[in-house]
Length: 145
Image 1 (tube, rainbow, N blue to C red):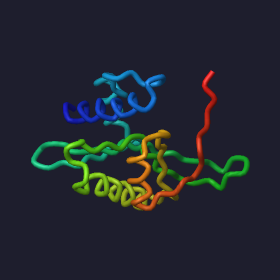
Image 2 (cartoon, helix red, strand yellow; image 1 turned 90 degrees about the horizontal axis):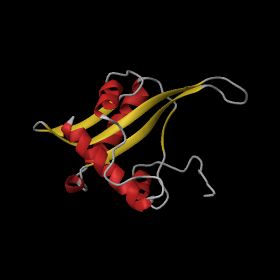
Image 3 (cartoon, rainbow, N blue to C red; image 1 turned 120 degrees about the horizontal axis):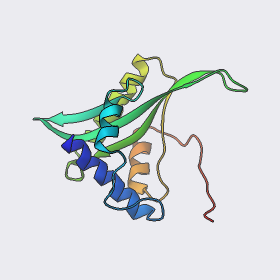
Image 4 (cartoon, helix red, strand yellow; image 1 turned 180 degrees about the vertical axis):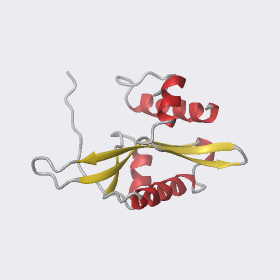
């Protein structure tokens, strides 16, 4: 939990730097109780990159089943809700290893695709995901009122 907490604070710090209107620096996405419940949820797999008992990165995922409703064909997605690598470990292949593990997991459960969102302005994350072969699926847009 302490390593996950440290990385959750890191992700929030990045988001707060990009969007201080939406993210409060110094916060984290989950309370310890929410994180414990999430770790027990089989539809929310969490993968970590660990060496010598220390976690250097994680991938929080959500399994999404899209039914055959309306115009959709019905398919299963592994959505990467959060992927973080310890800043001191970036460039060592931790993110690539986590992403490959998520892909292997997704293939193993018969998922159609792996998706995620990247905040506008997070160019290093966008470049990383493009470097591992991800492509834009859709764009989210907003008008701030």
